[in-house]
Image 1 (spheres, one colour):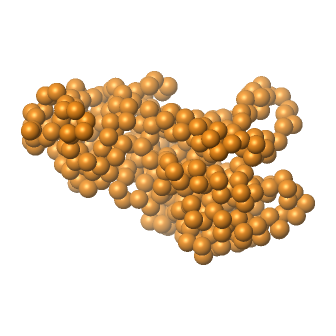
Image 2: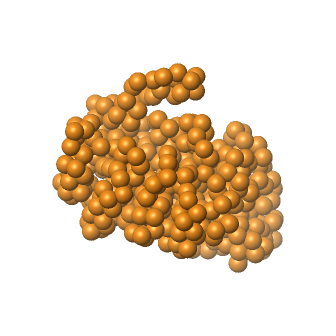
Image 3: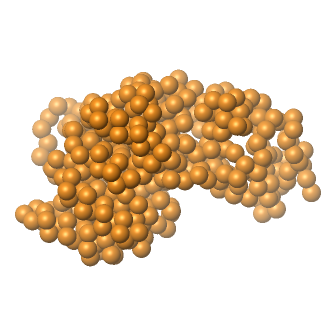
Length: 406
């Protein structure tokens, strides 16, 4: 049985195709599908979902018959957000630390080490429940692809269990045993690097796709970061790197040298760093994380400078309990437009197609035939409202893998 657009939906178990029609403004991220811009905008559009895949995109008047229909009523539809950088396997709370920082008071607790202690003490069930809570929270705000990392265990057992828990909920799992030097090895960082590149890597690699390292003063220097990423690559993991967040350093140049999928943060850049990211635009994405600068009152990354150099830019939340406790991609879009020099079009592209590039995925971040059926309906006539109306919960419906998720 087939239904006309606008007819009532069949019961879910009988539905194989669905048309979302009467879309006022559709962002496809495929210039061939729309107005020729990077967003590939289509007006008065429709999208047909067939199982987990987008089957057809075009004008509402030309939409084929389907089993079920959803009337967008002139609202905007965008690809599901691709959050390519988060730290969601953790326990504990760092409210006091944030409150002290925002109040200008000194605070002597251990930062990441505080979360490490809480995470080590948590049960598997507690860690998984916290992860699922944050994933559900992000999904309601339009995020349909999630990358997340280990990094709050810093023992062989705790890093492996973090990745095992994460792998049950996303295919984009990152081994970050090199988040900081474990407190257990504070007097012997070289021995910790040996652990991260040896026994810990062997235990963690089966659960991960990526290997990451925090290359920064107080964490891991360039030589240590190169050793960790090289060992991870030899184990079959793809490099990405926390680079140039707090100060100028070797992280960006190392990312380009090792053909890492992304250099994340990119706040403190020399002209040579910017040029390198521009020249490596097809290989290494500059992932910007404005939630971290917002939450720490730090210098904003200069997205305009990177874009002018031809770099590929992604936006992500960096959701973590210490320096960016937000799961909201719309919020990060608003920050990028207000404080990082991006246009609303550039920010949305970076939060969707840019994130897909950072994860080296071609099946997500766009609404085009053959892509995974991940999309969000906005309670607004245009995607520009994501920056125009910051803080307003504009996402009214989400499809993930072709299934209505919210």
